Image (cartoon, rainbow, N blue to C red; front, side, top):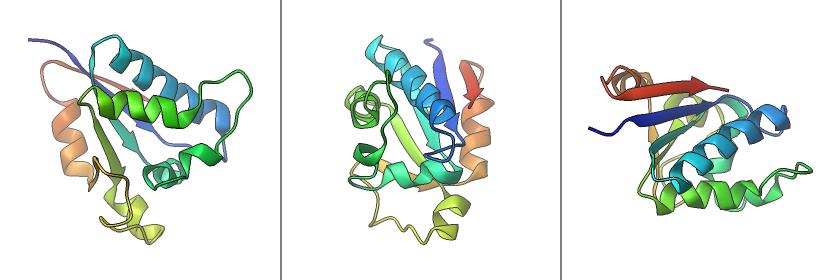
Length: 121
């Protein structure tokens, strides 16, 4: 059974290097054929909306839209945290195609799987 990489991004434009690291690891793993589940929490929740990742800019970092696309194109999951979405008034109809909104119970289920590796940035 292949391992699953669960990456939780807890920062957005407020802490760009930490945010970019989470997306870079998730996108790189997806491109390498690893099954990836990327969780967008806190300020990174905004990147689950159309056009928001394109507004992010960090020198010497891969573009966030490309990294997000790599995860989605590989069949990976991208999830916006339920509470984070609610605090930002983000609903299911607001997010990009392929992005879901889910809560802590789903996150815990994913990270507790025998074949999971979780990273939090």
